Length: 116
Image (cartoon, rainbow, N blue to C red; front, side, top):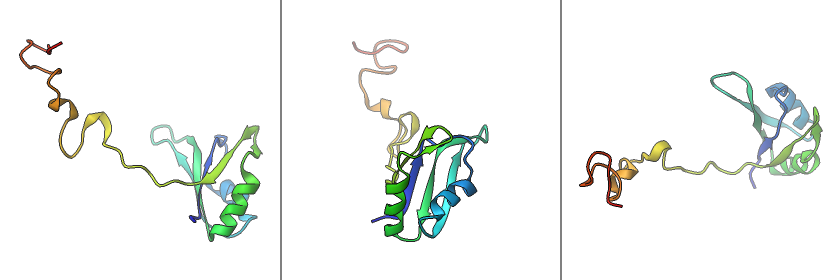
């Protein structure tokens, strides 16, 4: 069992240190990170906490899931691994996805036309 925990629906006032202190009462916290928006520098409303062992992680999840923090009911559960995506905008290592379609593009239907 993993010891990495997802914490969601966080108020924007929560910081890395306050997140760490909330989980520290259940055991050793390896790391605590609130995800921040690159452009605004504001919290995205979720973060991750890594606990020293799976047992203390499960105890923290059980105790803190649904708890109210600054009027918001937080979501606490095991973090799932990030899913691999094909990339944004249809790009992939194989090239642009729409190029393989015969009904889209410059085909024989004129400028921007297709076979409909």
